[in-house]
Amino acid sequence: MNKWKRMVLAIVSLIVLMSTVGCWNYIEIEDMSIVAGVAIDKGASDGKLLVTAEIVDTKEGSKSSQAGFKMLSLTGETMFDIVRGMISITGKKLFWSHSKAIILSEEIAREGVINIIDWYNRDTETRSDVYIFVSKEKTAQEIINLSSLTESIMAYALAQQMRFENSVSTAPVVEIWDFIDKLEASGEYAIAPLIYIHETNKIKNARVSGAAIFSMDKMIGTISGEETKYMLFANNQIKGGVLAVNDKNGKPAFSLEILSNRTKVKPVWVEGKLQMQINTLTHTGLDEVKAPEEFTNRDSKKVIEKRAGEELQKAILSVIHRVQKDYHADIFGFGELLHEQMPQTWKKIEKDWGKEFSEVEVVVNSEVIIDSSAQTSRSIKIHQKGD
Image 1 (cartoon, rainbow, N blue to C red):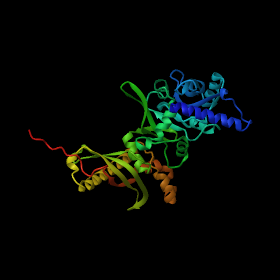
Image 2: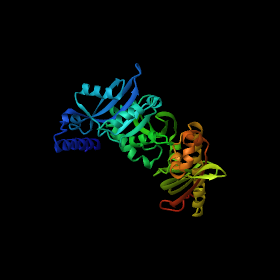
Image 3: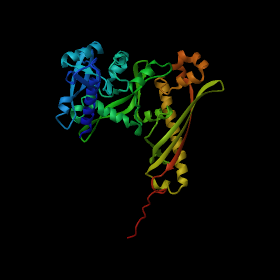
Image 4: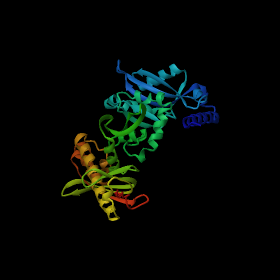
């Protein structure tokens, strides 16, 4: 049975079970519209909110091998008005507890998301584990409308994708509860993964890579997928992915699979100046050798480890310096650490933390250990054969 159909049937079964437990909130399944996800844009003509909801079609899904879905778009002044308006169109109550994705257009994100997030947070039927995204396309609607091409429920496909994002580590995995916490926290800045349409051989799919950076509730800029990886290193959030290591000439030579990582960040005073000391310890496996001449014996492993550590250290420092210079936004949680470990210092600089963050000195020390080199400790050698 198709996995999306199984998911739909599981949701329907759960709803039916819930409705039979008690009669105080009994609603027939035929009277519900299960919302899988929403895309939120600004209307091109009137500038109002434009919400596109992906709704699970339980009747259609039960008849075919694919999970059914419907798209419903409506404009309005507020999220509450739009949601109520959708009920009048469908003639059914919208069921939000199985929503999995909120996709925001960049235009919405840059203008401010507090009203949208606040509505979602206040609704008693919404869940806090829904994933949030910012579209790199012109609209968020373009992303969620990929359902018609992939013939699957896009919001659920995105949720599945984010469950395995840790093995790639080029985008942050952000649920709405975490996003809200960062918006409310002193000294922290919210981030959200960027999502775009990737096309290969005329087949379009949604991909996540990079991160949108928010100051207060407004998006102020982005970092790339590669930069996001090193941000995750600094935040002790790396679970997997690949480290590319160059040869002595600066060309890609080795690929290391990240097996585990531990990052420790400590604020200290050095000669009267605040300094953030970052130490990373990364265990890896050697998965690819593009320069066999540089991997001839076991001593070569130490050389690669040293080079990998130096390159990782440089990359982490590079993304921190860029964010300090371009955005003055502490997406690394330095302020929270100061709040916890140096409360008196934090009281003095909290109000000017954006400026203080952009000027704080950062020192990074990275150690990379190669635990394994697959099934052999040497690379394949090709000998020239005689005539």
